[in-house]
Image (tube, rainbow, N blue to C red; front, top):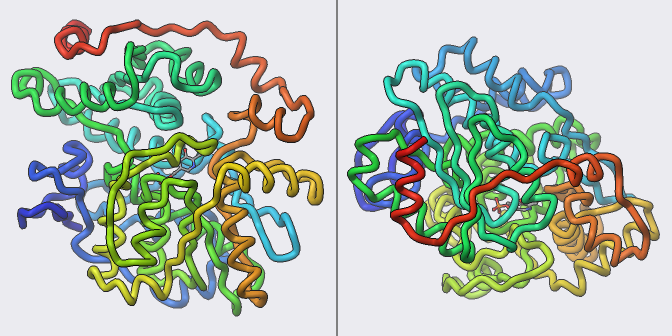
Length: 431
Ligand SMILES: *Cc1c(COP(=O)(O)O)cnc(C)c1O
């Protein structure tokens, strides 16, 4: 399979090049040249397959001629070696729990897949690969854990000092070995700016193989479609396909769901569940795409004012606005509604949601009120314990667990730095 850039050039590259580069030279995102359509018997018999078999069937055409089948199967087995349960919450709403991986967030799947692909590619390279990533919270931890002890790859994470949650910070600063955390005296935009500068620094790129593990990387994006196949496998009412409600920020996850749909997965509707960062909901209403500065909300991993992956959704539908509107709807959920959903669902159904999943739940509930025959799934993208301080306030109860206590006892190890490119560059060259 070849990938082309959504920028203005027409050159095609394979999966390996797309992964190592992250982004095309024209700054466009990579996109698969063809969307594989899976045979109908695969969907009819999906309950008889293991999740490893499903993963291989879905992913194989993207990596043909790049990874030998055996290698791909091993990588996938390692990537998904935890559960993805579909849990009933109300009579017609189910939670797809995507937080059973090592950092308790759905980004583990993409990070684990990408790291293992790089490990394989690194074997044939003479220089070490350095993965450079800026994080505002969850990405850093998932990438750090995904690449931990992966041979031939070093990871440098830039995060804004004092601006990530305590659990998030510990997840990215307590590993050591091939993982380096740089605590930048600045905000997330400063970190992202430094990373961009490093990627465009010719001198640095001659000395190191520098790659990004941000969510636009195809190796992080493509495996996310597996969630939707795993959900469908566990869906009882196959004659009445599910509505998927996806808590969305950069729109990689819902774009992956739409990719699965284009490959033949039966779905009634996708809901892009947004917090008050409402660029896409406004686009679906008006047809105008107007990026805005991000606003801070309780679901902070979704605070994005110009979602990078939205362009992939447009490409999937050949920029046909009407066709897209038939399958994708969108709701905006405020912080007040998010808190209310967490409280209500806990009280009434004894199920605890994190603020991101709660946005998904609230959007799905609104949709079902208008379409009472439908049943749906919201993607629970993080474990509520990652946000325990907030949840404890909302439900007025202590929920501290051993898992969190263990993490809070670990010692953070990071290098505090000014937001100055020369200092970062010297650090990268000195390792
Ligand atoms: C990253 C993230 C999201 C948003 O996913 P996108 O693919 O960027 O839309 C939602 N929830 C959690 C917990 C996240 O970490």
